[in-house]
Image (cartoon, rainbow, N blue to C red; front, side):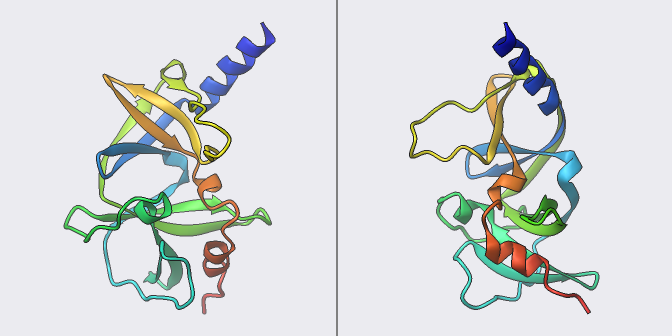
Length: 170
């Protein structure tokens, strides 16, 4: 009985509004509370000696924001940016509990949807080699499944991103 109660409270905690976006043919969702803004693709200044998914930094109204390509971060093929490509500026918690802003490049933004707790399931187990920590849940929306991301865990141990995000802005 206790396991069932924890399952229900976990699903209720995940309930809420999500911004959905596409990476390839897959649909993902981010809790709206983590999103600062959505901007079109713009000139990105490359930063040497960063991982391949780190595209560089942008100057967003006087603030330096690191930009990463979520497709590449997730091991998908890199594609040429189109008119639908966007940057979602999100707030993530760094290892020292500071809130930093990071931009993620996605193929296209879809919509904001309200997802009920009973429509969200825990991610399936694909074995020990599969790291599912960045997946908050799987949302059943109509006849499709949207992968809900825990954006803090996507960057959890990424010191490059967190260091770039905390660079002094002068």
